[in-house]
Image 1 (tube, one colour):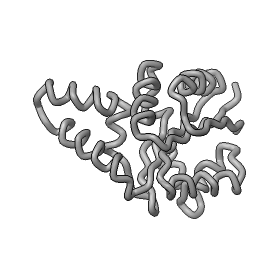
Image 2 (spheres, helix red, strand yellow):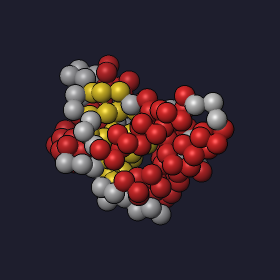
Image 3 (cartoon, rainbow, N blue to C red):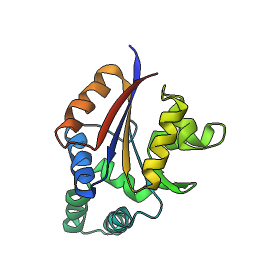
Image 4 (cartoon, one colour):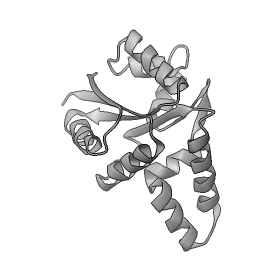
Amino acid sequence: MSEKCLIAEFRNTEKFRTAIEVLETGDFTMDEVSIVTHAEDKNLAELRQVTEADENALSSEKTTAASTLAGGTLGAALGTMTMMGPMLVAGPIFGMAAGAVGGSLLSAINRWGVEHDVAAQYEAKVRDGSVLIIVTGDAIRVDEAAAMLRTVPPTSLEQFDK
């Protein structure tokens, strides 16, 4: 089965949050989904703080609130995002970027068939305030994610063959 990469761009934080929740209903996990945002994104910084605080709290009421606000497993990824240059990254794309020559988002998504100039455009979009959801995996699973994300809808949605 062929491998694919899906990149969904969101300029609206509420749509991004909804997209995370939509993917969770499809049982997508942190092994399939990566999140990329600019390190100075104030909206996601607030969301990360809520997620981190609620993950550390013992109250099931607070945990439920965090799950509702940020999603469950995928929402928790916001609390574990790692700095990579001027970006915060969570999910498997970070491991790929860390191991890639140059250690950048550009290098990591090039491995998924995204042309260099297209990858550079995505980096520029993140610098300008967009948030990316990147889904990688077999063609059937990525097509399922694309169909689900179209219901939100994202600012842009593209698929690439590995």
